[in-house]
Image (cartoon, chains in turn cyan, brown):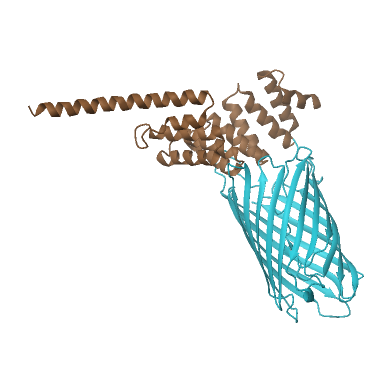
Length: 299
Length: 203
């Protein structure tokens, strides 16, 4: 029996722990807590040295009807030449509702994310950022087709607002053992003075996930390859639920992720990747190499 | 002389009542016949005339829940079955019935909860155990699935389906000997069972 598809890790709903007795009732609420850490190193950057981030995410879902998620993360970008590091805090609150219209069988999900970012940016350009990001998604009944349309409205200080549209399509094949997702990032309304000379950017994210059927806890349950092409700036990552408010112009990325089901309730996900950036003002092309790990627990 | 209008009124009431009963019987008959013919919308419409607060009101709601399920109109089916539960919270029929559209919509946790509610009323009810097992399998809760399937097999030892689910669950949790035993039991009940033969031949 192949592992049926799920979507990105954000779309995964934790599998609740049910009582061992069939006479006992399943709890209507089930929860997931995850702790994640990211360590990155900049290569060929004139200004930036390292990136560190840590966060905790807690989700609660009510039966099959919807849920809420809250996430708190801290980020530090250390700079070269003894320049002051950027310290940032991000708070996310997200809610989702699921519907199952008989007219088009499957699951329709309406989601709304809200972010608040604060940091020590003395210019305030990247400080006190507020983002509202709704998304409507539909997963077919056979769980082999997914589409969504996301929108994000980001408000920055000092005359910058960003609109982002993220149409997405995903489909499964190989009897659900493989999944491909394509997400377009169309970012509009940019102030060129604040956005590397751009008034808009276009980019495309492609991810392929393969699910393994081994029952050994040592063998990964999933492998994900990701490639990002095109350009984006101030992007809102609808899967990772993060905001690239500190980043320069992103010119592409590649990632490799592995997931393990350590136990029925505990999951580990690790990812390594490289992103390419351009600081237009300094004509500086550089890379960010990152390692990411997340440990989650369902109950 | 005053007696005659009274008698006439009573007689008319009796006639009307009998007519109504006969009409309801005809409506039910028509509904069952239309269902057998696969005409589910018409089968629902055939019992529209059955009073919503009469003696068969509960039956009407249950039947509508079933027919909407057959139509694939799962939301309406769930609504009707939940209405039936509100009317009669001891109705095993309603609690069993609502599980089907929930499974149809892949609302596994709600289906599990409804199956457990049914088992509260009717411990070891076969259909409640079976539908609970299906919901647990969909959630990949192998340990609970194995326990439920074992209960089903203990209560219905002639039933092959119970052993199929028991074998699957044991296979997923690497209890290979137990999986072999269960699949062997399947073949005793359904010789040539494809899934059982495939697993045993791989071993």
